Image (cartoon, rainbow, N blue to C red):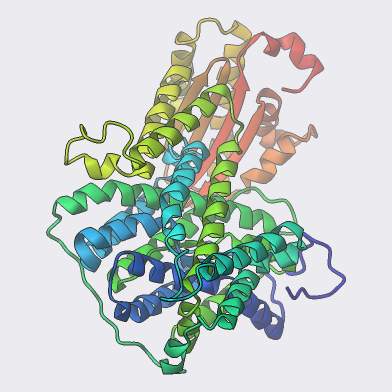
Length: 593
């Protein structure tokens, strides 16, 4: 992969997100990046339509709309429009997570049912973005990782279906050999290639398998010859089925779950790209995450209205930025333009659709393996304790059992069969229930809605007193420290509000969560237009900050962890405090907690 200004150092940032690289360089990097993802955008809809038994005449229109939507949303991700878009390079492509549920929807109700489910479930993503601060404890990496692993299990059979003879009368070894060469090439470059070559491994594997098929005489290029160089295919917008029949309600939970899983992936990508695209270490800006989720939801909504599969962010974006050292949003904008333009070049899509089935099967197999690996990483992200391991194992294996109809298949009511018959849906439901039960056992939560005034002080004290009433084993010194932290954060926010050039609303949300001897105190207020993160960093440095910033100085000494999160319309401060004997005044003299 081309990288400017050699010799480069891996991970070195050449152009930050707000910088302006030369246009020639930007177009070159955009072309390379689009080459890496174009196969996924084009092949995924074709795989779904073929597996569902729909006529091949639909493929061109569905793929045209897929490229159109992916191009538009990639540009929106690069150039934020209002609350839509991350403002970073986040490439959008057709989501492989929807393969299994989309095939089922097409088989049960055709294109109209599928599009209706996509449109309705896309609204969930807007809700997730809007309520991100409230849902962060429910939609955890543990739940998302388990669901992604189950997704891989449910989709894998469709990869194996591609390993069939290429044509009647051909030698029995040809299809397996083509699949093996494609897979071996991809794995070889992935295992033994440099970081740059690993990105190209799927493309090289597809080329190797296609060349071998051509050698055997099994490469059919009739579709490429018939396709026009420039043009628009015959388009059919299927519309929506608003009757909301039994098939709709049976499949809706599965579509909602897959949408949530896609949102979790986008959540992770939006955080990772922020760390990758700035020269200095910056805290996570959750407005970027919300913008990425909104753009993702917009893509899904447009996909359903136009008649194609939903899209999602591709993690390739992060790898490309890391390798090239170019994070300028200008490159992301050019990527979106190229994807959009390719929609009007039918020969490109026709060439990709002419890739032989065994090669496509090997490509899907690797894609699903990467999906499964991503799920494992998500589960392990926050550590795998005994309880978490139990939850993951129970959710995964019960999902497998329901998927293969090995658990009470003959006793499940007909109305429940579409839900429990899907391993991803049933396994995710089990995981969510167990996570909720674990949360009930381990923690106690209470919140208060009030106004950001000095009159709120008694309510803060009452909230902390309620937490103490549930944990009488806390020493008095720890409770006093907790009360002091609550008062100081309120005083700090009042000081910033008084200094704000724009008068924000005075709504205040405070929540306290106790888990054993650990307390998380969270405060949410309207944006105060202050760089709170800098104040927090200074408070934890141990250096004097001056009288006006004394509340933050005190907080830095009291708490174990102090974080600031920015959301659209909300500044959020979260602090973690230990309430045990180690926090006595004597200990605080010898160590900073």
